[in-house]
Every structure is written in structure tokens, then in C-alpha cells.
Image (cartoon, rainbow, N blue to C red; front, side):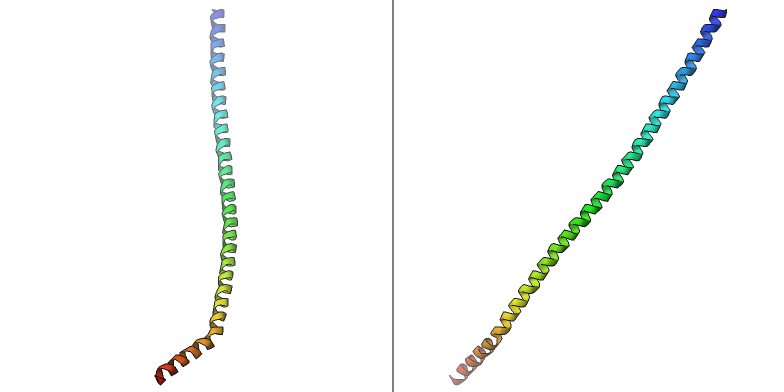
Amino acid sequence: MDLFNTIARAEEEAASILSNASRQARDMISSCEEACAHDIRAQEREQRRLYIEKMDERKTQIETIVNSRSEDNKKDIQKQLSNAENRLHQAAQFIVNKVLENGSS
């Protein structure tokens, strides 16, 4: 009987060790999954931050380009306006001459 009791206790101890090892393995897997999920969330936040940063940089670049073109357009419009003002006297004189020519015909 003593041998059977020893074997039974050894089997119980083996079952207990196996149960504890299984529990520890589940705990380790769960802990790893939590750590991975945490890392993934941290990486997502970092990627989101970098995305926003790059979008802001690009927005600033585009605004600079648009403002530069807007300034160029303003200068071009001002130049054309100045040219038109310079020719205004000639246009008025041309109109007066045409009216006078038609009036004397």
C-alpha cells in the first residue's frame, strides 16, 4: 500500500505542478497580450501624432505657396491697373477724336 500511496501522491503532485504551470502559462500569455496591446496603442498614438505633424507642415507649405502666388497675382493686377491708367488719357483722346470725326462728317 505504501508504494501505491507514494505513486498517488506523486500523481497528485504532478497534476498540481501541471495545473500551476498551465495557470502560469495562461498568466504569461495574458500579460504578453496586454503588453502588446499597450505597445500597439502607444504606436498608434505616435503614428497619429506624426501624421498630424506632417499634415500641419504640409498645410503650412501650401499656405506659403498660396500666399506667395496671391502676392504675385496682386502685383500683376497692380501692374495691369497701372498700365491701364497710363493708357486712359490715350483712350479718352481717341474717343474724343472719333466723336469729333463723326460729328463733322
